Every structure is written in structure tokens, then in C-alpha cells.
Length: 445
Image (cartoon, rainbow, N blue to C red; front, side):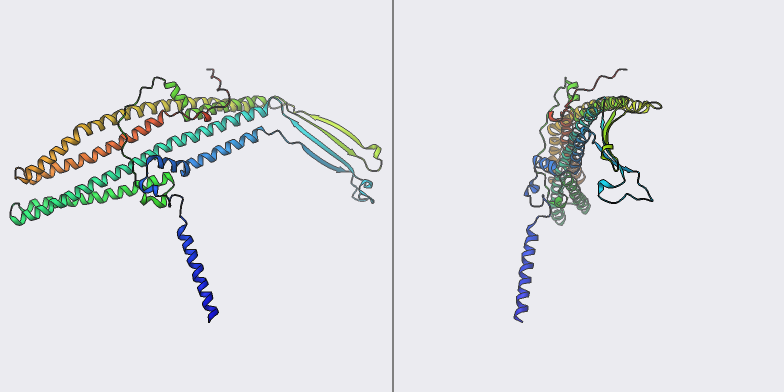
């Protein structure tokens, strides 16, 4: 009995320690981070760089492209060949040691020597492709950061909507309680209480819908920063950005050339030029040279050495298809560069226009509309308490104030996202991502 008690105590101790370890271990990197409960935009960017899945996939693509540089720059390996002949099925290979066997053996070593700078052209194309992959990663980061800012400000918007709808619902609760007292005193008719109660219930429904919007915004932001399991803890702590007008962009060509998508398209033009030159270099004959040693059975004096050289003969085909395909791919890369530059130019112009429009709307709401709606609602409240207006006029003023406040925060969110899109549109790729080799040659049309 004493032995069983010791076993049971040991199991309890081990189980308690295991439970303590499991409870202390966080379920995810973000689970133990209290920053999620007061998440700033800068902290969200840090989580984004570390955990965003699209960005991680783009990094893997860069690693693969850099590995291709090693493959493209590697010289061809030599080949070793060993062959035996004159083996008689009836007499066999004879007795004695290996030297006494009746076998004619040939050992050869050959090496392919590429001509026409093929290896250099392959390496150059791989370097351009690696540069394009790095620019693609920067473009993914640029686009995903716009999405991150959008998700963050959507959460701020949802929080503001929840606050406004909650305040409105609370205000209606107080008005409903006061209306019930006035009804008992005979100051108002039952229909007035019914109308106030209906609007109060609507406000409660709006508050519940706002909470659902906030939960969806939390999930969207959590995916961007890799914290899905802790989505309900996320609370955006930053305020709205201040109004700023887009600066003039006279050096539009410099902006275009600095963008990651344009850099990637230009790098692919460079890679296509290298591939075109490599296709043309196929017409330069490679040479395979080798040495061989032949052992004859019996007399060692008959053993011999030899040299050989082989070159291809272009009697039927001269690589016309490869060259035409490479030239077509080069032209397609140039056309794609023109397309990307046009899209980038349109994005810059559109984001500038959107930012200007959003700034003007936001300024109008801040300076005029919100104040006017608040004054109208306050005046209606004052007039209703003194019997100067009816309940419908009071409810209309409240609805107008509620709608104006919601529209104001929506316009603020539109401005914040437009500002993020504008800043991303004019962002240049880091200099370390620029082309390491010469610029692509100008197409001749």
C-alpha cells in the first residue's frame, strides 16, 4: 500500500509540473505579447515584417533565385568512362590476377569546354532574375503594407463606430427613462414614448452590429500580423493621422524608376537580353576534349594512350527556334516594362487624387458638418425639454447627428487609407535591391 501511494504521489507531481509547463508555454509568439491589447501602427509593422505569410513566401522566392545564380555559374563537370571488351563467352576471362585477365579495357576522361561566354550569360541572366525576385519581394511588402494600414484603420474605424453607437444607445436609454417618468406625470402621450423606444432599440441593434464589425476587423488585422489566435485581444491604440496635402511630384520619372514593380520589370528585361544572347551563343560550337588509356591483355607493351576532340556539326538545324523564342520573350519583357510603368504612373496619379479628395472631405466634416450637426441636436434637445418642438423633430436631429458622426469617422478612415496608398505609390525600393549589372539596352523599333 505504501509503494502504491508513492507511485500515486509521483504521478500527481509529474502531472502538476507538466500542466504548469504547458500553461506557461505560449500558444504563439504573439500570445504572450501584451502589445496586442494596445497595438500601435509601428508595432503592427514590426509584427508584419516578422510574420506576414505573403512576405515570407516572397523571401523564399528570393532565396531560390539566389540559389539559381550558383547553378548558372557552375562549370560543367568532367566525365569518366570505363569500358571492357573482347570477353569470350566460351573461354571466359582467364585465370590469375587482374593483370592476367583476357580483357581489353579502355579508361577515358572527357571535359566539355563551353564557348561563346555561355556560362557568363547564364550567370548574368540568373543575377538579373535574382534582382527581379528581390524587387518582387519589395513590391509584395509595399502592397501588403498598404493592406496592413487598411486593416489597422478599419479596426480604428470599427472601434469608433462601436463607441459612437454605444454612446447613442446610452443616450436613448436615458431619454426613454425620462420619457417614462413624463408619461406617468401626463406630460407626453404614449405614442411619443413608443417612438423614442423604437429609436432606442435601433441604436442597440446598431451597437451590436458595430461590435460584429470590430470582430471582423480584428480578424483581418490579425492575419496580416500572424496573430489569428489572439485576434480578440487586438485593440488599435493610434489615433487618426493628421491632414496633409500631397506634395508636388515634378520628378515623376525618378519616382517611377525607383518603384519596386518597375525595378522588377526592368530586371526581367535584362534577364531576357541575356537569354537572347545565350540563344545566339548556341551557334558557337562547344568543344569536348578527352584522354583515354587502353589496356591490352597479355603484353603490357601494347597498352596505349590517346586523345580525342569532338565538336557538333550544324548540318540540319541552326537553333533558329531557340533564337526566335528568346527574341519574342525579350520583346514581351519590354512590353511588360512599358505596361508596369503605365500602371505605376496611373497608380501615382490616382492615389494623389484620392488623397486630395479625402483631405478636402475630412476638412469639411471637421470644420463645418460635425459642429452644425451637434448644434442642431443640442438645440433640439433644449427645445424639446421646453415643449417647443415635438418628439419627431428631436429624433430627426438625433438621427442626423448620429449619421454625421458615423460618416465623419468613415471619411477619416478613407483619408488614412488614401494617405497610406499615396505614400506607398511614391515609395522607392531600397538601393540594395537595385540592379547590380548594366541597364538593359534600349529597344530598337
